[in-house]
Length: 244
Length: 219
Image (cartoon, each protein chain N blue to C red):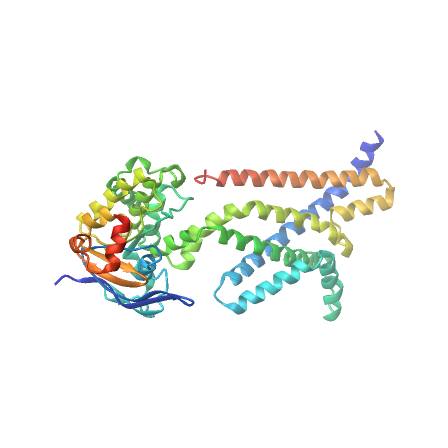
């Protein structure tokens, strides 16, 4: 029995009158890659952002590594150290060089000494194929390069869960591949990953399970084979007909 | 020839006045910056009460002319509390209270101009709010804020001349006193004007230099 890393129980989120998440249940086990697909506005990103409490859930529970993230006794900052997140807009720190972007959290949070952190940054840059960009500033990089740095920055805290919020949606088409390749390698290395994406090819090829969301509920969950090969729900069929 | 003699003999007193102007400005701005930061934090805090207090303060200070505020402190408050407030203290209080309100709005604007994604990225790495502010938001906000901040510094420096009204012997008042003795309005006011322009131009140039130095990485 694999360990459960992330568990959402009847997770709800409303913005005022708008119920964006209407009770989501999902378990993600260690090493699993789960892709969330669905039309825009279906609540995928909101769901992802509730998992590390960038959005405050309005109901239900999120349990990460056994800690209830809404519990007053859990230290959300400590929990977040263990959950890396990659954003659609990269959100690199523009006033810091690539190396400094990657070093910042380990030096600030884990009290890693600067030389060790810089060395670690170099290793991570190698992993994402950007060894030559260590001293560059974010503004000097292409979108694809920035996103790979963002992945390296998230990995610097050695999280064992990674959240990806539409990581390729802001990229020019020719740069999508380089980012997906890094993510695919990460999946192969056994990282637990939850990926909100519109890249159906990636979802099909890399994920262990695919979650189809629509209107704030999980409509269907299954292996890529099941979801893309023979979807059961009409809403899933309609969606896939539109995007494939 | 006459012109330079007049200006030359007035110069020591004028420079003395300038020194006073700079002193009062500098001290006022230190307090103003502290007041500004405090008000800014109050406005950004989760507490509604603190936010409302800060906003009322800003509205009052923006609504009050500096001269009225200085009269209120120097004469009004002094009378109400039956104390004597020196013109230096009253001046610093006036300018600090006034500039603090404007600076708080400048700081708030700068912090809010930093993309929300920056805070989210920092928090997602496990940084607590305060650390994220310090390491990620403020360094970017400072760059945005410098031009408006220097602008406010310049306004405050010029506002010191208003305080000649409560008897502070700064640059403008020094000029007035010299003219009372020699009646050379043209020469003295011209000189006083040039001194203000020179000092303020130097200040702007220095700020440009700082801006350029800090622009690293932001293209």
